[in-house]
Amino acid sequence: MEHNKTQQYEDLLVKNGLKRTGARLQVLDILSHRDSATSQPYLENVVGKEIDRVTLYRILKTFEEKGIIHRVLDNHGTANYAICSNSCTEHNHHDEHVHFNCNNCLRVYCLDEVKIPALKIEKGFKIDDMNLVVSGICKECNNAN
Image 1 (cartoon, rainbow, N blue to C red):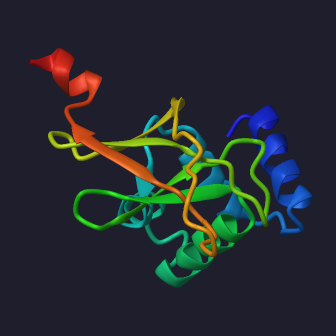
Image 2 (image 1 turned 30 degrees about the horizontal axis):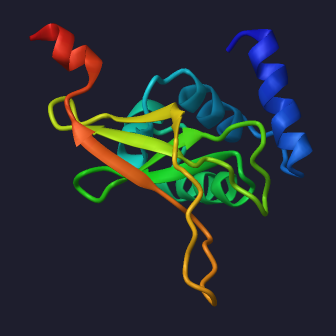
């Protein structure tokens, strides 16, 4: 990890009241360098024996609760994780963008520039989370054909 990035990750952890552990820093580094959302099985494969499965699960759960990452399900129901926008907090996620599932490479992309419009819902209902998933062929797979 380069020094500036490490400092950014450490600052993010401190801002969220979390200890700066090697495992947390490693997970942040992996997630921030991916161009698509990342599944826990992929993360387990990358970290190998450095971080056990239970610790990785706890890190992802904590990061999601703190508004550091958000979760989106792929076409097979597997949870994938991506870094949240800077405006997300522990009590207020602002990741109302479209998620794209590629039917070819199976990656899940956050389309940050494609916002989900505000929804007017029936009185008495309270929205806690919104997620719009679109499936098709991503631009990398489309360009490869």
